[in-house]
Length: 428
Image (tube, rainbow, N blue to C red; front, side):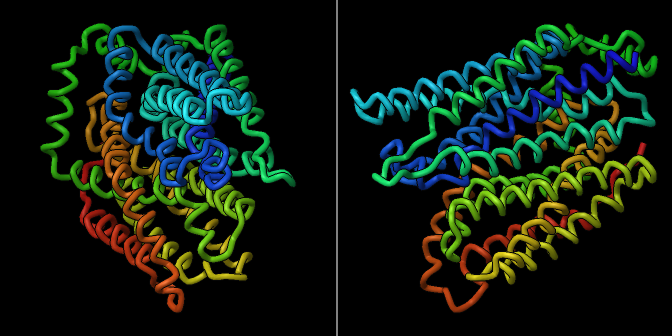
């Protein structure tokens, strides 16, 4: 049983990590991507924003296929879509490199591939708590959820570090390495597809508990769309789940927007593409530390309410630290501030997921997770372009750290933290 569990966990970790890496790939090199495809930088942000736009329909697809076909088939669909998206992105950059039909067709092909990968992203993100419940016992569930949540920041960190290493501008002013970057990521996705095809099982040979076996056997093949909608509507009527939904949704919106705009956000303070990649990587790598710490503390105490509230209070403190530290010529302090903020903000991933499971039990884990991530991604769509507009006003407010974009971030943090302090949902 342990061998099957470990093989399954490694396979899911690989696919989930790679998906996160594809999402954030263009953020640290957005100026070079704009130059390569001959489009404005705001259009480049659509590569990331498209994932937020497609999150809700992707969640619906995940829930439907999961109910009708089960875990193995839904994960296979996810990695197949990711691999095909990676191939289309590679073809798009090859069209630009060929230089025979202009850059627009290449951009559109790349956007199509990115959107396809974004459509299947919820299969990996929403399934974290569900996978933990199917494959692990109650005593291991919190750590398993944290381990799965670990994949998103790890993949995003790689997506921040690697692109500036492969993509650069040569002496003639031409952007090089875009096709190599796409080809590497497509190759990793294809390896993941083969791994899922060969090694990913529907369920462990021995279920972790009888109740888990019965519940998931009942869910599969019987959960119609009306059942999902009825369950979701019941959650939305729960005042405590509304608090979770709002606070986590705003927090996720801040994270997505900051990671998407990290190049532009740091460039106005005089930092380069490489610096932006380092800041983003540090944010996410320290986020891994936060995720692990959250998993250990939850596993030891099961004090979900207290942990949830504490993490949100620490998050607003870390944001203030970042705002004060991110100034020209303060690379070291800026890096420390990004790390502190990442450690706190990303710890909220497993905390919120497990708190939602406790709050909505016995509802299916992927429904609560899907709703949490969907609302955050819906908020992200408008927030990215709103923050981008505020960043462009930086020069008019250069004498203060409280620039329009930083004031907006503080406002977002405030409206997320305040309701979280009143959360009093059950621990079952």
